[in-house]
Length: 219
Image (tube, rainbow, N blue to C red):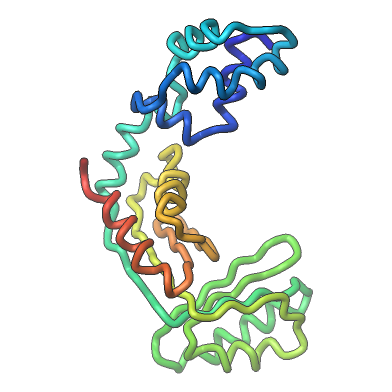
């Protein structure tokens, strides 16, 4: 690699530094010292610290930084935030019989009071998130299936997204970044065309809600 390519590779692996650079929050000399060894490894030759600093000064902002202002404007148009508590997440091994048992469960809860339920299917496992009121019905329907994990004391935070959300670059990263900065682990993600739902532990729901509610407000 040449110096410019090596610099971009180093910064690509450090997205938080990339964003701080875009906001002029980074001491360039300190950053150059931090990545100098990696750049020398990628270029295969010794590089002066001053050359690294100059390369940082001359670089073009990355695509996500160019779109940051547009993304912030879009965030301000998000709809209501809906919070639900008392959820349980079950993860089952995926089997040929699982879809019919899911259908059995949905039929059973049709006459019950309105609650929350969501199925997320992966390659080898399926996660079901339900209200606590539905746990007995789910466990009964899933008799014979292999339970891989069960997590209790969960809450969900659902965002209603505008119709154009699927065309916005970096939308989910924007949420992940801020929620991570608040020290909140995300247990599950549930996404539909116009909704994004983050499943978190009950003890973290207030911090997650406050974070999302804050970033919705225009700067």
